Image (cartoon, rainbow, N blue to C red; front, side, top):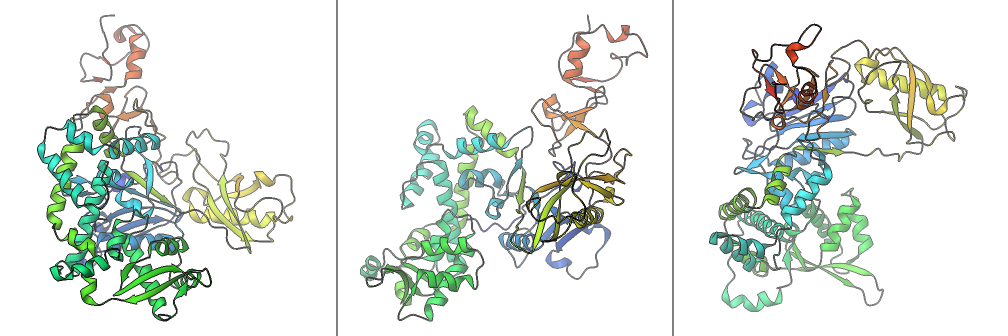
Length: 578
């Protein structure tokens, strides 16, 4: 994996809520900021929330929804910390605070390459995908199935066909060079990019550890043959297609080796190793994944062996000491030392430009456009109902005699004791809503729809399953009076209905029709991104409607705008001669 460290994410503060415009405005929001190195000792001023130079800036609303606004690592201005380490910290913060959903607008670049395209083709997910950020919604009506299809289209391009179809001889040379360096046969462009990026990471690791200066001697060929099947675990971890970062795999491997050192003579069974590792690592899935990979690997100057005990039939792990000369003959290192980090990245950038961006294939061009138009990703933390002493529910307030057409807001988590009554559940729901949302400040809960007809003093346990969604009704909520404190999207109940399929604000530039007031993308309406929006705009639907009527100037009533005197953009051609 790339040790990603440069500027990763940016989101316009005024556009933070696109996709979540139907959420009620929460009463509190918390900013998490790690300033850049030279800002530590400066006083906080009013503009601190608008800076994009922070090492970390995240925002979490009190309802558990939030946004990662920006991170900057080594190349972004930090002198001490990589971007991946900042992401590890942010992920732990969100998990500890029981966040529900965090969004990110991924516009990250590296050497002029969009990483959501490069990583999408190489690994099937964005750089943020290593922390389980998944596709939320795309721009211009792109849905999840179309996004995944585009990734599959690009990543499955056959290297032999690329060589055959391209006249560029440099492409063929690059593909053949890295194929010769790989232990496995590289078939698709995903195989090639993944190998190159992993090789780059290994090169960087060797440079940082001053290992690249080690050169196998000719008279050590016998030792090389002896240890040809032993590999350094960091190198192996970097090549594994894992949802965990390589550093986390290495941490678990170090814990395992430390446990084995105490029983170097007799070894440990797999279950004993697993139980010991759990004292330090909480993720059992991560432990199992590392144990599966640990056989004939070098960690901390030891070779970790795995074998079945012939007497007990139990799988056991053991350590074997390794001296410095033997450690230097790891067979992967001899491949890595042929390349430099900068040379590999130049090759990656060259293939990225000519195979992806400059492709003559309309299918590839369409797929690239789809992925680059997909910038919105989210990570969701599921609710955990592990405590048998409590019952938890998702509480949602149903519409209260209102013509409000927006979809209902998200439900709020309500937790009550195991033997709580319906009256206590009503009180807890009311408190949770009042404490969380501005518009709910005066809410009085009268009824729980799912428990309608039951006495308030009846115990909940046994009447409704824990983890269920409940709907409450009452009074004291005014959604009819327009207020910026009602919805995150503002007081206006605007409607998005673009010909591309978009039905909500996706962060792209939009224009509203001056007749129907429905919003649509400027690009989809024939207005280029660099072009100024005209003072009068009529969408294609209204154009069709006008076209089926008499001339606008001849209409009765208050009359229409003098169409010939005002600059106007029509989304479709209209014949005024009728």
